[in-house]
Structures are given as C-alpha cells and as structure tokens.
Image (cartoon, rainbow, N blue to C red; front, side):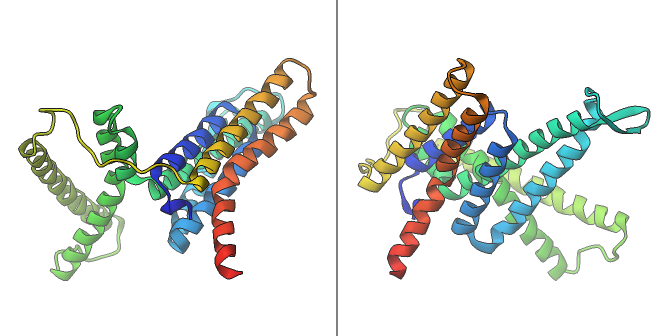
Length: 278
C-alpha cells in the first residue's frame, strides 16, 4: 500500500498533482483530481474521511455560488441580485474556482494522511530543517486542536460545566468556553515544547537524523510514472500552445495524462488488494 511506503515518493506525487492542477485551467481536470483524491482518502482513512470529503464539496459549492456575486463580467445574465448581474460566465468561472478549492482541500488531506508531519520533517529536515519543522507542526496542529476540543467538551459535560440549553446564545457561550480552554492549553503546551527543544540543544549544532533506507523497486517505479505523467501534461500543453496539436485533442490527452497521475496511488492500492485476494 502507498501509505506503507517512505514519505518521499508520496510527497513528490501529491506536490506534482497539486502543481499541475493549479496551472491547468480546466474544470474536467479539477473533477478528475477530486475523484482521485476522494478515492485515495477512502482507501487510506476509511469511512471516517467522508466528513472531510463532504466538507470539501460543500465549500467548493459555496465558492461556486458566491463567486459570481463579486464577478459580474459576462454577457449571459441569469438574474439580478441587489442590482448586480449574476451571469453564466461568472458562474462557470466560479465553478472552476470552487472545484480547484475542493481539489486542493482533498489532496492536502491526502498529504496529511500519507506523509504526515513526521514524514515532512524527514523529507525536508536536512535541506531546510526550520521549514520542515514548522510545516510538520502546522500539518499536525489542526487535527490536534480538534481532538483537544472534543476532549475538553466531553470533560465539561462530565463535570456538569457545559451550558444547558439549545439556543444560539447558549451554544455560543459553550463554544467560547471551549475555545478559551483550547487556546490556553495550546499556549501552555507551546511553552513546554519550546523548553523541551531548548533542553535538547535544538539550534546549537547540526541536525542529526536516522539514515534513510533506499527506495524499493515499487517506489522507484511510482516516482518514474509520476515524472512521466507530469512530462506528458507539459508536452501536450506545449503542443497545443504551438498550434501543432488541435486544442480539443490536446485537452483530451492532457486529461488522460493527469488522470494517470492522479489515480496512480489508487491503482497501486488496488493492485496490492488484488494480490492478497487472488
């Protein structure tokens, strides 16, 4: 399985998928990327990732609907809202933006699941130890805050400190109390972490780490296919820009190359599952 490999191939692959999606202005490319990221999340994390997938879809749909309110360019007016035209062209651009936002959210979720903070620190520790450490802490911060807030909320309920009532004001007071406790706890933990790093001599000398093992044959093939797929997208984009290949054919081949790139870890996991079944 891809999640059992070293973090470097997965990090390279996900960064390549994100980079190609950001520079490619195409709605089908974003949709293919979202489908691949959703399937990969389900393979790695199981049914609990449905909440993340649903949240990304909701946010993408919200961006799609709200974006035309600020972008009034276009000739096909669907309706007017507060005196501002809501155009079809702006809606299509909003759909592309929303799909890009959802695609990025899902792939960054896959980055956290496959690579994680320790994997990022392992990949970037020698070249950029400070950047690797900060990135590792940021990746781990949001899940830890959510887990900590859940524990604090359960502790408040068990101690009969949670505010009674289901009104909006009661929920806001309870949320503010939980947030204040999480913030104070996080500040205290940050001081403890800084003291621990200082006591271990962080920053006083060159960083040492465990020797990394060489990539296996499967990992090398995975990296090679990733590079080839990215090169394929670049070649077809260049041929289209030079007029050598019609734009429709170039977009189709670019979509196929990006599909291979995005679905590559999903296919690897499926091959691994089939090898255990048959």
